[in-house]
Length: 249
Image (cartoon, rainbow, N blue to C red; front, top):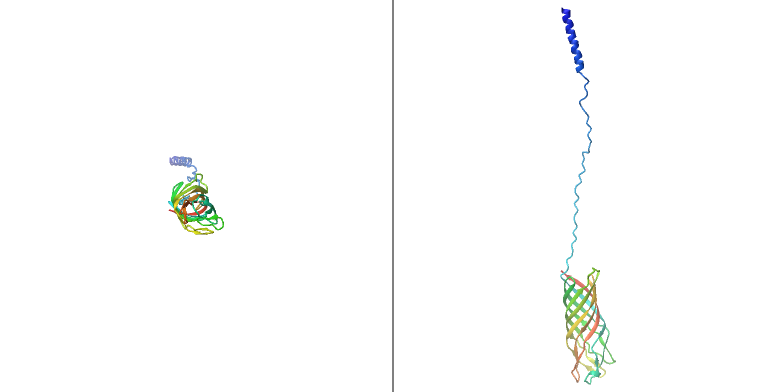
């Protein structure tokens, strides 16, 4: 009986071992290696580049300007004096032709617009001497005109050189009338004031300007003698001038 009980226990134990072997299986590692892409921990940060805007100041147009110029008379003539049309015993033999130097210095102030400039001017004008027969001379004078002046600037094409049209009109104060000298004597003279005008064309480059004007100073002169008669003694000429402008802001 004891042997039978012992055999039953041994069979039971053997069965338990076999079942345990079936349950126990090979254990694989639960740790899986996951390969993730490795990125650099150092990130490149592109900061925005701030561009500083360079502002170039644009010069405003000037309110006006002052123009200082000097001119030379390269052609001129006076009124003609001759005995053929004078009721006098004085020997008039003065030609209207001129010689030597004539010129002017002028100061002009302008108010400037887009294409038109308007201003005032004053000038000192030294007129040429007369050509005359030998032994005769005089009846010349000088002038200081005060005048309105205007310029029309022809700057449609943005050229470096700006052409312009120019005109002056005003009143001429005439003075320093020279004596009328003849082979038989010297006679005092006088001169009246009169109208002044000039017109022509010019060119301006930056602050420099050059113009050519045809102009006239109107005057009547009187030679003191046996007949105190006044004569037309206008001075007409073509003047080449060079000037420089100073802007007024």
